[in-house]
Image (cartoon, rainbow, N blue to C red; front, side, top):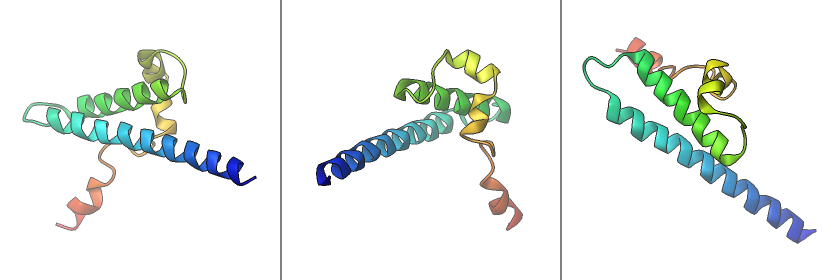
Amino acid sequence: MANSHRNKSTFLNKIVREIYEIVLNINREVQKEVKAGVSWGSLEALCYKLLLKGLVKLGILKGEVDDLFKKFVYILFMPHSLGHLLVPLIESI
């Protein structure tokens, strides 16, 4: 039984780490694109597509990224949009 628990723990730690890497990659890639003239919508689309790509690669989702994007599947994993956490910061200024 102890081995079973250890195996589950190792599996969960691996999944958590891989999801962390997806989020970190999204953060880095979106930051590279932030510049004058780039629309917020294009940054959000990039974010969502990278999220979907990572989840497909992990096996959590199946299908083509563009098809999943058109079906708004990303909303299941990121319902608040890219700038959700910016609002409290802006409102406090």
